Amino acid sequence: MKFHQRVKVARLYGGFTQAGLSRLLSGNPDANNSLLDRLENREDGEGSVYTTQIAYHCKVNPYWLAMGVGEMVLDKTTMSDAAATVGLAWEHVKSPAREQLALDVLSTALQMMPDDHTLRREFERLQRDMSRRRQIQSDLKERPVASSRAPKRQKVEQ
Image 1 (cartoon, rainbow, N blue to C red):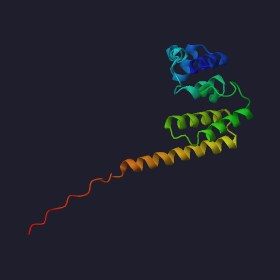
Image 2: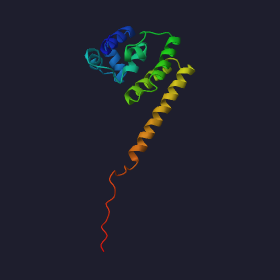
Image 3: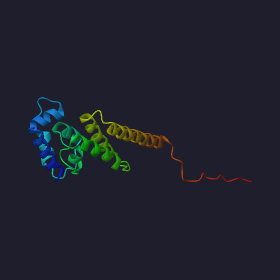
Image 4: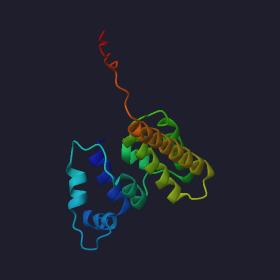
């Protein structure tokens, strides 16, 4: 099942119309269904900045919605295990977009289960790792680049 199909299945499972979920996601009471219409009909889509919010509001597994892996609906124990696995599995992925998605999945799971200590530890660890990487990248950008050319020698006149 592709992402756009999972979005529609999740929306229907959550009992929302396209317009209803669009209003909830945008925070605009006058929003129409264009946001969900685009997500549900974009066959080449691989995700959305709204993925974790859709999962949260529709009460589906955010990992399933984002990646198509696992069960659509999880009980709290399975949800905790799945979210922790996301954090561990993407620990070595260097793509900032994937790291952010993992962080979003863990964040959504924490909203559903705020007392889960395993999730909280994984979430905090991933936040620290991402922060360190950003700091290193920032430091590298600020560091002056040494010239690869040797300085020119001046001729000595006699």
